[in-house]
Length: 525
Image 1 (cartoon, one colour):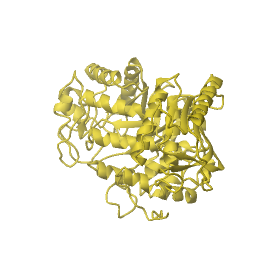
Image 2 (cartoon, rainbow, N blue to C red; image 1 turned 30 degrees about the vertical axis):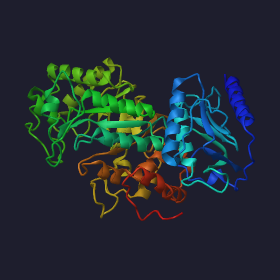
Image 3 (cartoon, helix red, strand yellow; image 1 turned 180 degrees about the vertical axis):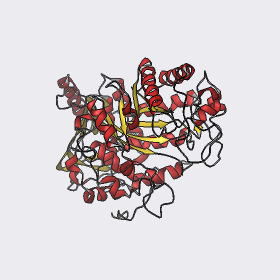
């Protein structure tokens, strides 16, 4: 199969060469290894020449998988957005083709990881090899970063963007690389979520975890229980009007993410953090918890479902079922943290019953590290945030662990004492501290093979719109992208901060309100 693909690539290349009599271009000396790529690839080799992206370039894709053509179309859209060039995809070029980008579905044994890719850049061609459309999409993000901000108008009679030649071999370190967005404490619009997804995609994240319910608000339509949004969706921290996603809006977010090879993980927090649900349907409320009322404060730990009522589990079966039916990804997050108003025996009973409900709907349960107290199947995933003993217990059970230590990854923590937004209960997290740790060694004794990946959660108590969201997320999120993707031996703060400074053109083009930390020389050319 790989030979057929290569033969097709060669045939298209020969056709391009024969269509016109090309003038040899004298490219300036280039260095592919010096391009400030984030995340840093496994291996980059420079050959000193260049590929000229211009109006005489076309994109062709492997015809074995429709997903590859979609990736090619995505690349074409991004090229047009950045350069103004219209680069055709799998269409006749009517004698104008001189250079091509070929996105190839390859069965190479070197592409063991489903998100792995290889890029070969020559003067007249770029070959992107990947086994899956997801791998091709990750490679396209690298290509986007290789395109310079300005064209070199002295090389030809038309603007040309010079891409250094060479080879890039790359694959992710972790299977799971995500961020969490809390839309419960404050509601964020569909467009704000989509913009966040775009930023995640550019830096090769593959997961967005949506925290859809909490004490202050319920954010997703459940058709069998309409009061959840009628009552529970009408409040948020600080007394705003709240809001919620209809199922159609949620499906729109899921589809938008899927087009960028990002999986949405829904979270319905339980048995604590449930005031908004119990306010909507009082039978859910545990007598051991505070009486439900509209909550607009930031307190935690006072609410609980009743773990001994069959009607509670019937309710949850409906909720999990409706959300699972419109969520194609493999995971369902049940929260499980800070359930201080739930007796320990009730908590364990509840988690074990809910795990069965999640499995009934063909999902793997994910929960914050407290759920490790229960007797769980090895298929459930522990989300580590504060107690290493729970991560170790999960590993002993054969369960995978997502690394989100609050002291390192919580995006809602302030950068420093003068940060405009954020909290500080887990300490300040400046940009260097966010980067200078290793998920593989953070929990002493946790086997590397037990780590599913890394997630950077963004709780929204102190932010209420996309601009404020971006202030807390960027640029720390970019560092977490590298921690989740790049080999540990590549992680070097001094090298990274130079590459981070070079992200400004992208951040400004996307109108991302990043925090300009003084730890980075943002004005460096």
